[in-house]
Length: 177
Image 1 (cartoon, rainbow, N blue to C red):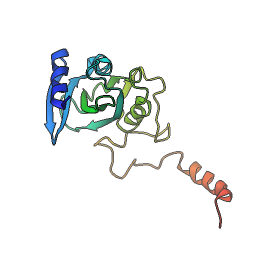
Image 2: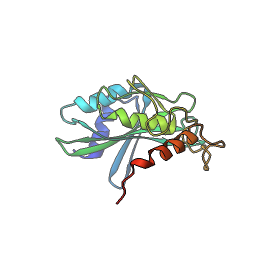
Image 3: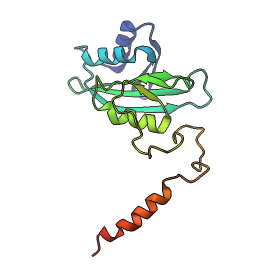
Image 4: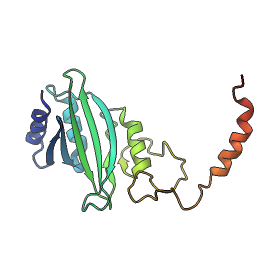
C-alpha cells in the first residue's frame, strides 16, 4: 500500500485527530493530536491491511518559538509483512510536555522514549522506567532543546570530578601491548 493511501486511511478512521498530511521526497507524514496517540498507534499495529509491527524510530523535535506547540514526537512505523512505512507526528505543547507511552504496543519504544525524555524533557505517561539514559540522573536541563546553552551548563557538572578520579583508579586495567 502506498504511503498516501495509508495516510488517507488514518484520516478516515480518526478525522478529528489528523492535523496535517505532508509528503516530501516520497515520504509521508501524518501529524496528529497527542490525546489519542495510543488508540491511533494500536489501530495501525492491529489493522490487518496495515499491520505496522515494527517501530523503526521514535524521536523528539524542538520548534523553539513555535506557538502553541513547541515539540513533536515522531514515530517511524514499518510493516515487515507488507513492506510499507509511514511517519506519525504528535504535537506536544511546551507548557505540558507529556504524551502517552507506546511501550504497550511496541516494546522497543522503551529506550527511544527514555532518550527523548533525557534529551528533550518530554515525559511519556505510563512508561515503566522513565529515567535518563544518556546523561547522569543529576544532570540539569535537556541538551537537544534549542534553548539549551550551546557551551553546555554554566557550571561544571557535580559528578565530573568523581568520574575523573574513577578513571584514574581504573587505569591499571587498561590493555597494554
